[in-house]
Image (cartoon, rainbow, N blue to C red; front, side, top):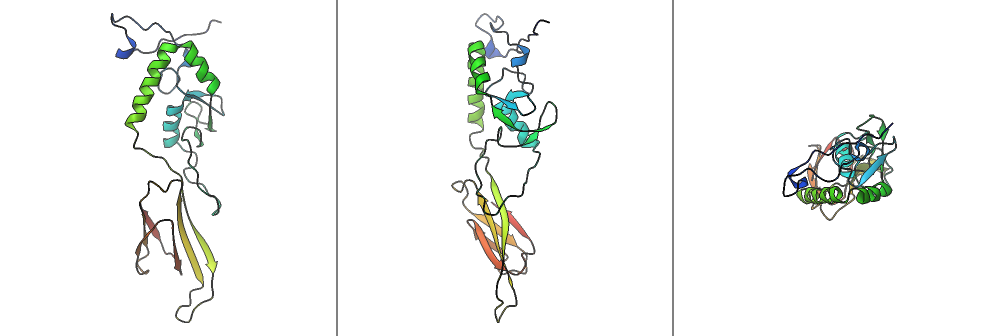
Length: 207
């Protein structure tokens, strides 16, 4: 059975000066199922589907399998790649999956479609420049609890240490913590953690 082919929908950059069609015909298997363009920086999911890295990152951002997970209080947050560091539902089969960079496929596409690949590369650079100010970080939020000897002026035996640990601290100026009104003060500023006696009652973060 012959392999099917598909010609990418041309944009004005993909026409030459005499308005003739592009010279490269891209095979259907080499087209991203999300953006319908030539795969760029392809990633392969565990369920064996291939997408552009940027398309997978965008999809994962809106379809996380677990936006919040429980981790050890001693674990340090790390930066991650939204395309390969998250588990999300595959946009093709909806299975819970993660993705890995397919360098071999990227090299093959660059060789197979040099003109179209160069155009896609230029488009991705423009898109990255447009989103240059967007930063994705990992934030760990939690409490440490310790039993302490009550003091004469206070019967509290519970010491709570509320912490906020971001993977990047250089882009965070401060963290505002809004505690239950029974605490004085009920609003505090902290870089990473705050210790209180008794019960938190409730807290709200403002970056």
